[in-house]
Length: 83
Image (cartoon, rainbow, N blue to C red):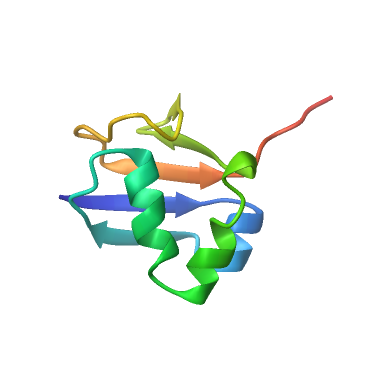
């Protein structure tokens, strides 16, 4: 399935792109992360610390073991803090 992947903040800087479209058969976010980490050294650096990784599927927060289902957009970003 074709999916749009969005990268924010430090992940965007490491990957070197804000968005990419990929063809994947990954069933979960974790499987997609493993695929992307294997894509290049830049991707591997972006996904090196899974504890510092957050994601959203079609603009809804999700955890790494969430099924991708029919999600068309997967966003990755570092943890957010506010104040």
